[in-house]
Length: 276
Image (cartoon, rainbow, N blue to C red; front, side):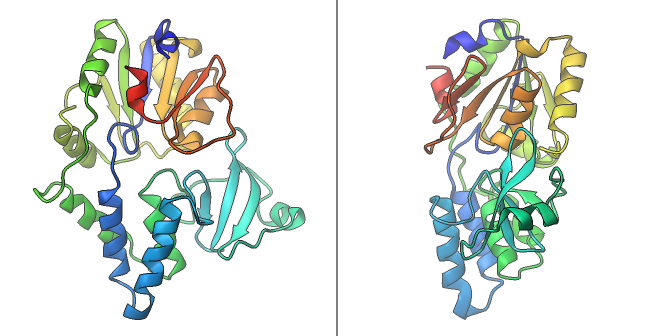
């Protein structure tokens, strides 16, 4: 694993699902959303969320969700085109229907089409299916919960030391996340990772702007594509854009995948495998 870092000069990290572990905050978010529903559907809502979390539902991390059509989209991560459309009950659309409604590259606007990139989007997707319009207030309530004594982030032993060692080797470390600046700083403080990164890019709106941000970072730090590594748990958001540009990538994926490792792509169950 360590050989992939040998000639690297710039390491770009994702935050959620990459630099900390655990799902308690996602469960809290789901329960907060659930309480907005009528009592007779709350159990069904939470059961579907649990199924999605365990990978036993049509809603899965790595897909996208069309809020208005209430369908799940499988995306070609290298082209950002739709390869499969599934309705909530598992019904699969035919190719002609896909071409009619999704003829072009998908535009992730985070309102109508959302990339289910991490655990935050599983409760959101199930909530939208059940007709909940206001998910944001539940998201804010969850963020507030995450800074109380009742919640404790699962920090990854050895992570801070490893990132600092990368910097001691002359490498630039950048945090690139969709979370807003206030949330990022709060999480980093909780994880004891504040002031560890050379550069922080928040509210990144991945995957829509991932390629542009990567190019800007390469220009800013005067590095070549092959000298950059992107580390993250979302193939569409962080991995595919890196590979398209000729960068290297480390994909954090705890579940089975059909992807094959190459000279530019390494697959790990968790980030700690990078520094052990």
